[in-house]
Image 1 (tube, helix red, strand yellow):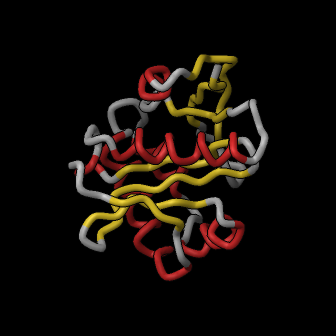
Image 2 (image 1 turned 90 degrees about the horizontal axis):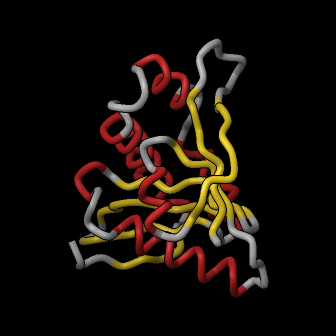
Length: 155
């Protein structure tokens, strides 16, 4: 899938971004995480949660034929979200999105680039030059269940 463009997201994209986010988590993370963990991860999310990053100009989408294939969000020098639809996984969309935001972060004078990866995406980030700096867990809303995460930094 080499025929896609990367551009800044607009508020009108938020519903499709939300659908890509849910689809990615449900279809690409189900081998590493339980249904209970995935439900906790997605609980309480809605399309408007992307508006602050869109308004800051820190959320990009990969688009092919007006369909959003994936998106990446940053805040300062942290990559906070990278999700690719299951159909586009392994096609270069995720790598292209990461190249875009790494360039954006460096253009803004930051040298340290970091993120918290799922165990699903850990190898993907390693291939891009990220190294593990620690581990942790993610949960939201006081949930009794959590996800294992890996803290990573670009060297």
